[in-house]
Image 1 (cartoon, rainbow, N blue to C red):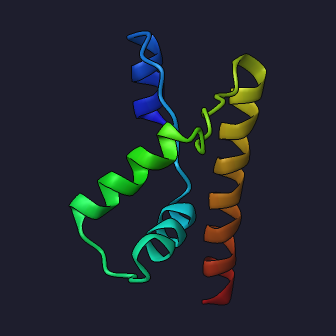
Image 2: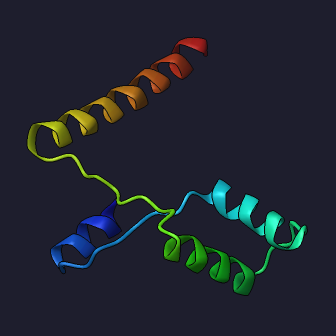
Length: 86
């Protein structure tokens, strides 16, 4: 998310490709699940060209604060469970 914030400040549009889509597309293209960087880049570029990506939405103002607060609460709840089990 930090990268997305930075790119937005620079007015650069970014998109996200689902890793599961990359894996399945690779297997469909050559019937091989092998992984290498060249093959992954080619598949990701093809998915973007075909429009199969999402533009991340970042919450603003109160919604961003609510997301952060919820994340902190989840971490604290996990820590509390660990401490209580000792």
